[in-house]
Length: 333
Image 1 (cartoon, one colour):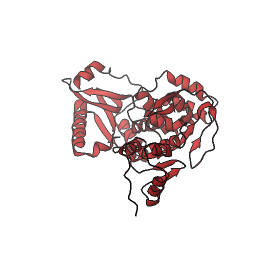
Image 2 (tube, rainbow, N blue to C red):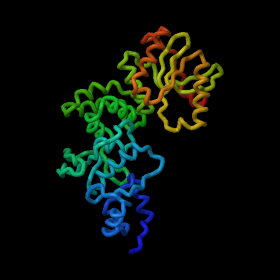
Image 3 (tube, helix red, strand yellow):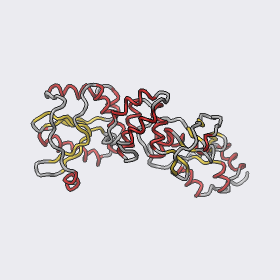
């Protein structure tokens, strides 16, 4: 039986940077030739994704399973052709935009608008030449603005708004850029609905579940009075930043927290959240509700919020107390 050759560590490190995928060119450069690749596939150690692309199943730790799947889509398309340029949702993923669907279509384009036949689920788009690109992980990627114009018409409203919120929150685009995005969307297939969604965006949302919760409240006619509002006790100590808030009058608030972080199940985090929530409840007799993403999409979320707002006599458009200064909030932390 022939002795198995160990794989070069640098090649495995490269695979981890590419969601476990490698191209034939990368393998050849590292000394892992065609015969060794065939043996790895035959033994089940590797899997052939498409012509010239292999899945080593060696993925980076700490990534959510959904992000691993999304990145596999991105890299399967990029590695299928060394001249490929990431576009649409694949480009947004590489830029770090949150809110994309669990599964995204592997899609790339080529310089000078060259046409290529799609294969194995990988879409080779034909866009006009002269796309503005940046370099991420040594590969060409269209700009965030251009990627949004390409991707938004393929997304649902909640996904599209969450992506826009994420891009704004991270400073990848500015509010002023929305007008330019709108003008580029005009006359594109499926863009009429997207243009109507643009006013729903808000860069203060810090996670897609928060964006989804805000949209559910908007649909139910109980849009929040404020987002990401800082709260302090009578001595000026910082109590917490609330995701969604409604002002009930007389210094009282309905505060809704969306637990979007997986690590909130850890004992230490649960104790920290409980302490923060107790502080928010105690200060001015606020009402604090805590939801997980499944609650937001499950249909009971807005009903519970609306019931409390009715009981408390909330009305929209009430003048809000002034927001604490950012300097004070920073000192309190």
